[in-house]
Image (cartoon, rainbow, N blue to C red; front, side):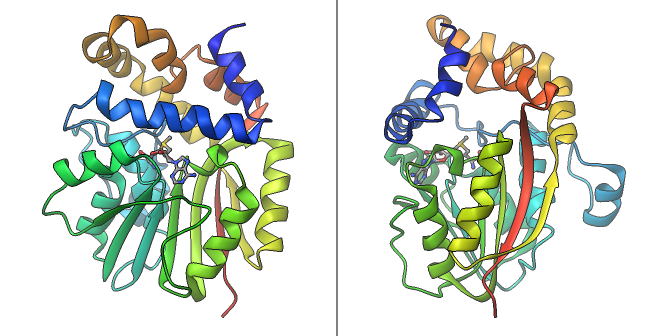
Length: 271
Ligand SMILES: C[S@@+](CC[C@H](N)C(=O)[O-])C[C@H]1O[C@@H](n2cnc3c(N)ncnc32)[C@H](O)[C@@H]1O
């Protein structure tokens, strides 16, 4: 069975899924220690309207479309002066971008991969962000601590997503909001809505942003391919191409046929 197909089967096995992702995310910073590799999402091509409303980014910057995934998500939130948490902060660049350009009161990144947190401490030292190791399903924070929770391409990997959303509802202040982007199949989006509602969160927005993600994947293809050839060890390239969602990967093909959708969801803890 192709590796990509296997990945999609594992989606239905939460305990195995969590172990696999943990293994992968612990390994990445060790296998790819490159200090300038700040992001692990598929990228986002902003629309003209978004460029007009939320400003433009430096499109010459390395991985600018992955940065755009954060920019055009967080710019929808009231960030300035707020307490912001990102769950699944990965290599830390997204939250750093948000902290440096949108000026929250405080920014906290949480990730269960200790090697990702070590990467952040080393490569984002001096940035106005604190990075902590911890699990999304049992967050090391008091209740009602944050105004905004960000979650970028991460929660599909959690063993108990219902518990994650209960944790989000707990750590958000009344009126606080969750801004989430993720990729999954229809049945799985229905479940996500159910979990949000059961946690006491009210869905304010649910938008299919697959076209923007597909465009980003297609436009980034030459750069990503060259990057993988240059920086990823030979024996890892096949697996990495699937993880990176390159053109031709299972992720790309399923997104293209509509079998899975990439969506942006905003949910709020009632005031
Ligand atoms: C695809 S990466 C995205 C990273 C980052 N958000 C970005 O866009 O670059 C998913 C991240 O979620 C983290 N993660 C997965 N399961 C987690 C869990 N149960 N608790 C906390 N973090 C988790 C992984 O370690 C990884 O860093």
